[in-house]
Amino acid sequence: MRSYGRIIYTLWATVWMFCFAETSAKIDLQLLETDEVIRVTLRDKPVLEYVKKENPVPEGMPEHFRRSGYIHPVYSPKGQEVTGDFPLDHPHQHALFFAWTRAKFDGKKVEFWNQAKQLGTIEHREVLSLKRKKESVSFSVKHAFVVGKGNERTDALHEIWTVTIHQTPEDYFLFDLKSIQTCATDKPMILEKYHYGGMALRGASEWLKSKGESGKNANDFSFLTSEGKGRIEGNHSRPNWVSMGGKLDGQHASVTVFGHPKNFRAPQHVRLHPNKPYFCFAPMVEGQFSIKPSTQYISQYRYLITSAEANSNAINKHWQKYSQHTKKLP
Image (tube, helix red, strand yellow):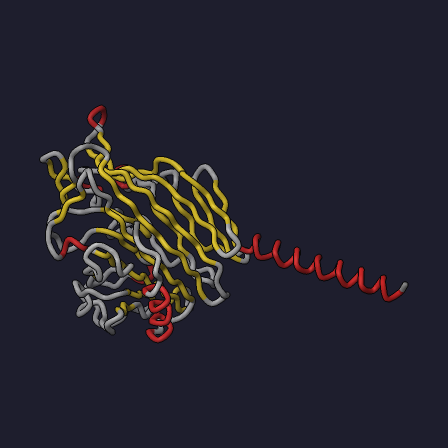
């Protein structure tokens, strides 16, 4: 009778431990939506926030720099904010954002990057889905690229972002971003040849390099590409990935962005700014192209965030996993 009791107890304990482990795994990665943001945490640590509602501009800054439909903050595993928003030197750079620069729509010049020109803007429209799985959470949202003012405002492009955050060990965060852009009218969006524009990342203000400053700044900020190049020689090169980072509150942090090998004109040219903690993947460097009503412009990127200096050997291992992924772009 005692042996039978032990068997029952052992079975019960096994089932309880299994259920507890399953429950812990499920709640380890949290996805929360509020009226203002979509927030993701891992092991109760913040990973990122997506901005649904326009944040107020800093005091004294013009209202036209307001924007929604971007990700900020992005955090390191040790809680450092590695992205910057409304930087005083370039207030139109909004952390992790996508914007086209020199463009034409319906025969008129438009621009969605430099908000001071007031030739276009980008705004969040709606949350399409929130998904929670054992090893990842994701959300899909819709943006509009808007031109014109007042009653003449027109949606030129619609964009859907799907952001997937993965369950990871404690030493790094990992998430993917997929963008699908389509024409909102029967008119194409023409992207002219230019030296920057596209999927961009603005780093923390502590990483800003003073004009005329040589080498790294006081916080050891630097760029590194998959080809081993830095900010000057790496500008307008075509690497598989770009990493940037330095010290924040005395602790190193780095952000690496991988360009999907099936992206348009992959590997895409990159713009590495000569003194600011910012870069973007800029396919228009190669020449003009159009997003036509009959097509989708699809691009995908992976983000690796650590609380350490960029390590090319470790980054290349992540790149190999990412590049060998056999799932095709639709």
